[in-house]
Image 1 (cartoon, helix red, strand yellow):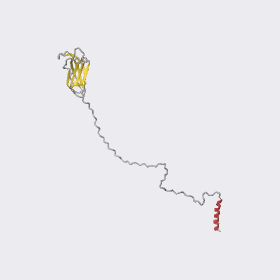
Image 2 (tube, rainbow, N blue to C red):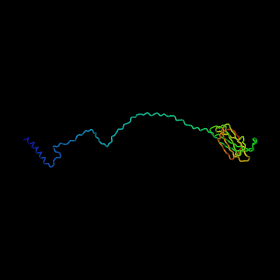
Image 3 (tube, rainbow, N blue to C red):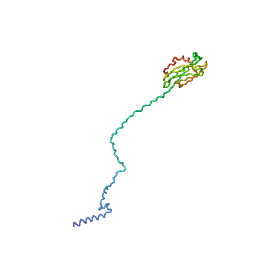
Image 4 (tube, one colour):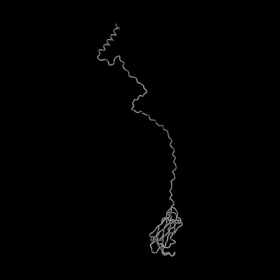
Length: 211
């Protein structure tokens, strides 16, 4: 009697389930689904493609590079420019006066006092000064006076004489030469009386340094 009672009760209970208006969402006989297993593939899993990959900087090895040896070459010698040798003079007519030269059988003569200076960088051998006059008559022996040599930066004052016309204005011309080469020519329209400057120079024919 007990063996038949238990199945009967189970059937009763199962049939009583139809009395519910709403059926269960999950049938009793259904199996609860489980999570699908992860599939391992050869493609790596990228968590966030927008985040740049951080590269750890490599600290360079402190390798000392030997500095090149600097060799200084000696500076080239400075060129020294030397002025080319040149002959140069200056003339200064200090003044004139007139006199009578009986010794040479001449009447009135004109005397000029001229200073010649060596302004070049060469000595002037056989330096001469010659006087001419516009009203010159016979050639006077003292119209040309010379010195053997006029050194650099030296000067000499000479007295020159020409035969001139009595009481006539005398225009004079002076040439300075060295070995018969004309270095300078100077004209004087009116030669001022030397007496206005004191007296006749006392150092005639004396070579001395330029002032």
